[in-house]
Image 1: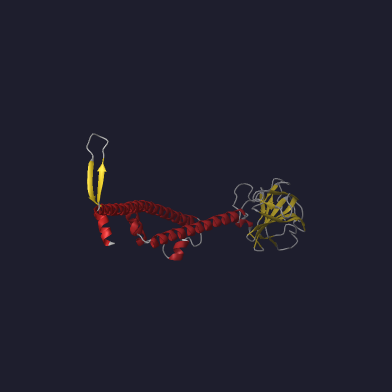
Image 2: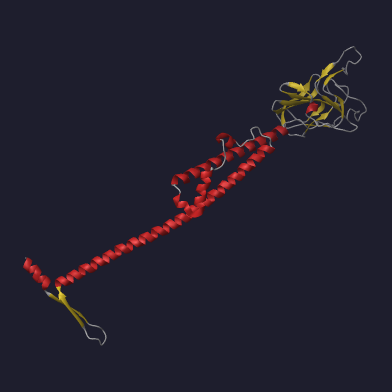
Length: 327
């Protein structure tokens, strides 16, 4: 068997190359074993070259992918830095708004909760490496930590601005519910506090407590709601005549007495400055005027503490009908 194999390998092969030109044919002879050897060597070289080339291609593809990823990470780092700058600006605006609004606890709520605000020096250096092209040296945990910090700061800032919005809305509501508008035009004929009774003057009565403010003018002068609120009562009451009571919330109510006619009914929602009645002389009254009271936490208080002081001839003067009306 061995002799047969050796004899087959020793057999001569002739390779004949015939060109299509005038050149002579080329002949090459070799043994079968030599031909198989070179065929195997050529195959090995071809396969080896393919493997080496493939590795080089994979290397360059990986290197290109890494370069693209590095560019994306650097851009992401720049975006994160811009986001951090925007949050710093929002923090400054937040602090200024709280100062202008004199909100209780005007200190930044995020800083108050954590003791410090914004990134640390290590965070800035980390971002500096990213911006300097060294993003590949930053650990994945650093990215997650920085992104989580940005998210927490953004959520905290949103909560702070929502608190400011609630505060502004509440202050606006409180302002609109504060009875600071004059209820009608006319002359002030009686202030809040103790006075001689206008109905029994000269009868030896020492005086009485007047729980409101009397403003006299011509009959049917317009009476306005002094703040936003809900009508709790509109009708006739002993002593007050035709009366309107408005609940403004926050424990504050206003009363409008001696009106000739009410234009609102119980349950109506009224706005600041809305006409609610006409001035009259119903009930216990000596002439056309409005008896105006302000109640806070269930007790009458001086309406002048809410109203802006007026100046002019009507202050403590006579009404247009020439008589001082009181109740």
